[in-house]
Amino acid sequence: MLDAVVVGAGPNGLTAAVELARRGFSVALFEAKETVGGGARTEELTLPGFRHDPCSAAHPLGINSPAFRALPLERYGLRWLHPDLPMAHPFPDGTAAVLSRSVAETAASFGPRDAGTYRRLVSPFLPRWDTLVRDFMSLPLTALPRDPVTLARFGLTGLPPSTWLMRRFRDERARTLFAGLVAHVMAPLDGVATSAVGLVFALAAHARGWPVARGGSQSLSDALAAYLKDLGGLIHTDYEIKRLDDLPPARAYVFDTSPTALARIAGFGTAYARYRYGPGVFKIDYALDGPVPWTAPEARTAGTVQIGADTAEIGAALRAAAREDRAPDAPFLITVQPGVADPTRAPEGRHVFWAYGHVPHGWTGDLTDAIERQLERYAPGFRDRVLARATAGPPELAARNANYVGGDIGTGAASGLRLLLRPKPSLFPYATRHPAVYLCSSATPPGPGVHGMSGHNAAKAVWRRLRQT
Image (tube, rainbow, N blue to C red):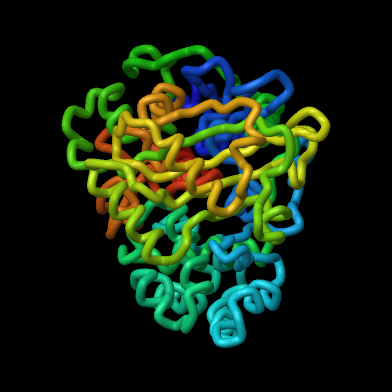
């Protein structure tokens, strides 16, 4: 009998399997797709030689993850590559605010009236970032806080809605960039704890940047898989699990799946019937014959570029996606251009590029024209650079990754308390009604992102139980 079986080889499932194997437990991992990766894959989606990341491409949480930093992933081929700027947010007038590794450079891009405000906002947390991120991402009840004072101070700043925090800024440039940071989790700007979302992304950039993985996000997944195999773990791909009886006998079962899929497989009935999924995304992967022709010079060297004219436009786009009736006319876009740091991703002189906008859950329309109209506002002539495009709306994303129910790449709504209490209010969110079955996907704390901490936290709960039995 195995000690543990893990279902789903996304970053969280891989991390859970590694954490158990490195503590001496026998582990087998089962993945429905032909390769491991989940939200961290790399594929030729458009033309030969153009290597695209179907989901996550830039990794501010990955390079800052306490789980990943504790593993020897560089030994297995992972290389983080940094663009000159982690992120830029251009404006219609051709200027841009930036999120730089330097706090001073970031503050200066906001203008003199908000530079000091921004420095005062981040200065209490940045010197204690490593401890703070460990405490923040390990909650709840998986580890005692190492710095409870800083964590409490962060909570006081981060728990209110981002609309409250943005009142500290006097000009629109700082407010708009911060609103874009919040929108990465597809939460309305006035939601609980959305201030914390923006702060985490900003602090992550200042601490270690927003890098891409050399060769694509698949290299992160492949590094985790190679380490797991060296630890004696077994990986079975192209193996879909429809019920628990499809799995070998084990002392514990850990699921990197959506809660509703877990309920179906484990026979939990209506255990997660009230679980809610969030808005979806419409994503386009591009093969380009050259770099994106951004008007703002800062955007040309940034790995990630946020597109939204101001807080009003970003807020309207988020509200439209949450209404579940029609997509926004001017979608807020998150775009990544890996080629500014990693020229291996495309043939010489060519580039890969992706962009996505928020759409209602399960939306079946085509957002291509709206996305490209937005891009043309900030990069005139963009369409002329397009060699090929691969589009994916909510149905296609859900078919590609079963965790993305209705196109929700966060595996659960992040609005209100759902950002904190995932998958339902509980002091033990990784446990289920069956004592040997656990959940470790992004539907559990600390939530969405390629960081492996949900898998790490769930594995900790599992190994504590296994050592008691």
